[in-house]
Length: 170
Length: 377
Image (tube, rainbow over all chains, first blue to last red; front, side, top):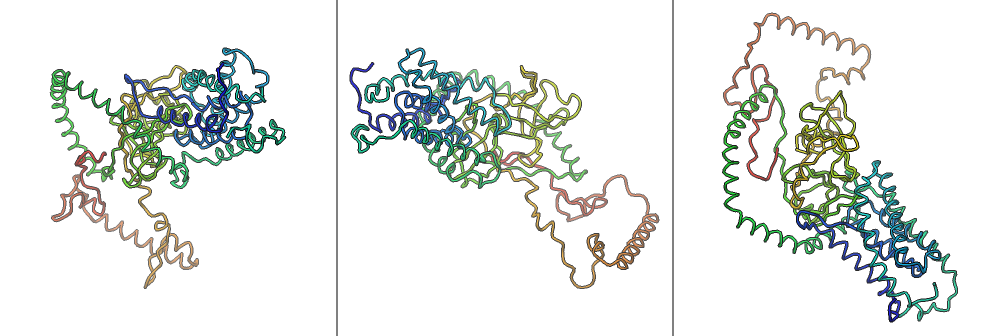
């Protein structure tokens, strides 16, 4: 629990995390090899998508996620709208179930986050299979799912930072 | 300004429902974008302005982000070359000695091959020009496997151009803008590549599924392939020239025939974009389909003209054609049998022109090796 509540400004709550996601995605998309191995390619915007939905409903969040998804699609060369719809579906589900999960321990929240990641990637899996006519390899999906789930501490940090800023939605 | 201090702090709205509507609207927009996407189309216009702008912006950003890694890699390579120069020199000497014999064999085979091509009147593909590119962004997820290269329209790159690493085929260009090209890798789920098995000449479609080894589908024949067969591009459909190295056939754990890609043996950092133009696109279809108009005296009846003529004209034309055929047969019977060997080229005939029995058939000159690294065959 943070000692001092941060003021919930648009920049601190949405702008900065979104920009960090953009920078991290670009950094990890660089053709870097360490000892012949490529770095993983996690879905960074899952972190704010989870934190924004857990802490408070917001009108701007779905549209920021739409833009973040478009950025992922254009940077990765994926079909336009693939990650937008995946992130928005995950955000919507977390919003629906936030009353049930609020106040749970960290391990439980991590599992909830993992479920949200699975939902987003399942949505991307279905959309890709429908569009391309070939389902992607499940092993390849797992290797993107795993590093994405491991990003939960960043979501936890974002939630803790603004948890006491707006108590109306507890 | 804090949310609580805003002008709408006293506004009472059912926020949950409002947010639900916002989520719904955003989802509808995303679905509309997804449905209208035509990423893998071969049409240049299908790539879209948003993608072109994003690639133009991303290319220098990726270049800057990857610069430290590239400099470090070059420094490590320099040090490795310095410390392992002696062993490398010994290895290269051995390799050179092994290649001497192969060089003589290749020269002899090239000579025989060129003679066969000339005798058969075989039309070979001309050398394909190419341009070298540096990969600046790298997407390797299960839903998109693409690369962004730092060459674009100004280098003559076009949508559909095949891309190779120094080992083999990597993919094809799906989007071009100024200064950047988007490459769809063979492993992407949207990738379909017509290939052939070198041993049996069997055809198949190589389908990416986001795994490192794409699947082979739509194979024909009984046992057309086996483990270890070489896989090359077939050239079918005019996407890529025939014979580009692709990989080796392997049996996957799921029992499906797959291809171990040659390009996987090294990093895809520098690539060659083949500025390949399909021969079927060289001819003007409109010109081929157009019927030349008769000029001056009536031309000999062509099948199309006969079909459009009156019945009496058709009978006259058929009778004249039959008389010509009879005259030609009578003339042929009086002539001595043809020589079994082709006649030598006529003096002054251009290289590649076969005279005598094959007169009128123009073959291209013997294929010469590419003059430099800027072309492949």
